[in-house]
Amino acid sequence: MHNIFKHANATEVWLRVVVDGRALEVVIEDNGCGFTSVPDDALADGLRNMRQRMTEIGGTFRLESQPGSGTKIILRLPWPELN
Image 1 (spheres, rainbow, N blue to C red):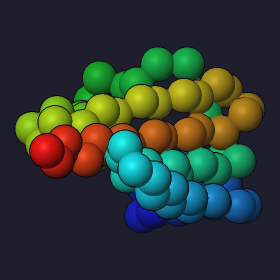
Image 2: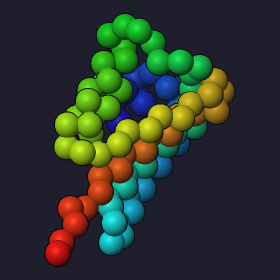
Image 3: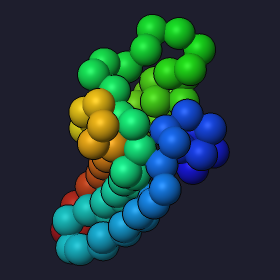
Image 4: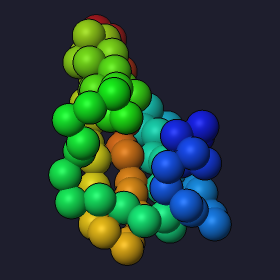
């Protein structure tokens, strides 16, 4: 949220949490400036860290962004299968 405020120039941010029998999914979306590709500098550390942390715990990280159309981050963590 801090980086959205600091970099995206967004006027709205949506946080959606979906829980079902298969996974926990968190979606963070804004209507900010967006971008074509993740910058290769310290400004993108937060995005890289989120991706790395999700991978470490067996989840997925998906990033969708376009200039002028905002950014959406989808974090998905499958539940362990119970027998």
